[in-house]
Image 1 (cartoon, rainbow, N blue to C red):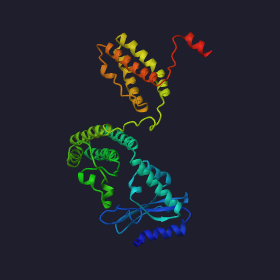
Image 2 (image 1 turned 60 degrees about the vertical axis):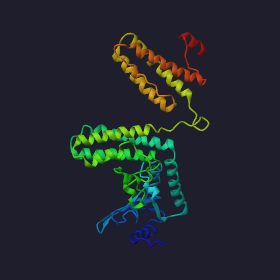
Image 3 (image 1 turned 45 degrees about the vertical axis):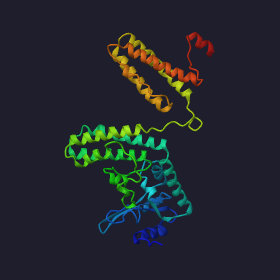
Image 4 (image 1 turned 120 degrees about the vertical axis):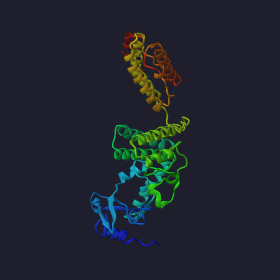
Length: 357
């Protein structure tokens, strides 16, 4: 039996003496150390069972090594289950103390469900897209930054988001930005905090552009490298979009919802036709752009093919846009007809009132 670290024993004694009913678990993290200091192995966090249990929290330094005994609630552990927080905290966890067997089982269930999510193609694809969106959000700020230290900081934040996205697409995880092949393919537990277990495939030029971030002393080069990483990672993710399973395996698609969407947007089609016929380019472009955004929405929610409207815009020949809009409207109607969904459409107010009264 492995000998208990004196600092671990100190915490356990404190729990048993002062917080026996208030702390469910004490958790250590394997490999969470630097230069053998073991700061995360003697303990990393505890799971409070009551509000009073949070009072166990304490930070201190021993022989130059900082220790943070902090609470992580069951609700916060669900963030790790859903890959919104550090997966490492479940994957590499060691239970150092437990209040009951039920608490241990609950913790193991969290770990099990996290791996189920990691192995679910649709789930990790969604998480990769979330990471990509966050990276783009930071990039929108970075492109206007001129100070080198700020650009470097934001570049690492962006690359960390992209590294997490790529890891998820590999059905694994990372807690840091991945700059080299060694980090990507290093599965050693003692390096897990700065590496990525089980990485198999990455976007084109991923490591080359990542190395430029480490080498660059110029904000322009940093921004170029980050843009290249964003572009190639976005392509990498979108090319691996999971295919929709057959309907008897997948969630039933609500085509009545698609009909409601069309009925609401039909007025936009009508306006667009009017603007095109009357050569009102500015207004036609505005409504066409709005429709294009909506097409992207239904492509995701109703599994409709991605419909391209704006490539047909020509301010000097709006009939092209009008024709394309009509084609796309007919595609939507055909989908609804194919699935037996009736559109609430009436030829006149009299017909509407007659049917409703």
